[in-house]
View (cartoon, rainbow, N blue to C red):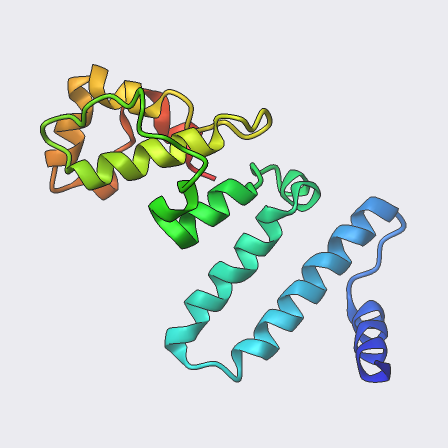
Length: 167
């Protein structure tokens, strides 16, 4: 415990000073996060650094206060469970009754995953970004063109979804 206390005190002393308390808190958080990240990455293989970065980002965004501090939507427990478990996250919670048929250009499995994700997150008032995505996919030919485009990664999602689904 003493080692971590000394490490923290050392970073407090070495980080930029400020009279403004909010600014000082931001400086300390940024400095300490960068310091810890750099030092942990020293002991990781290159292949593992991206995974480590992803896990840090997810842990920050899973906490609503931290996500709000960064002006990002938080990752709900339903989204996180779906990320890890896929369709299994909906077992016993989501039924297939009322699900529309998959568009002809989309595989039934992909459609089922999308439907499950949308249904899992419908009850979340503060984070319902997937609401209406299935309907939008079936109603617009723009999604088919997006799906078939080899340059998909460079394009925005159709129908304004790019702004809703990107953190």
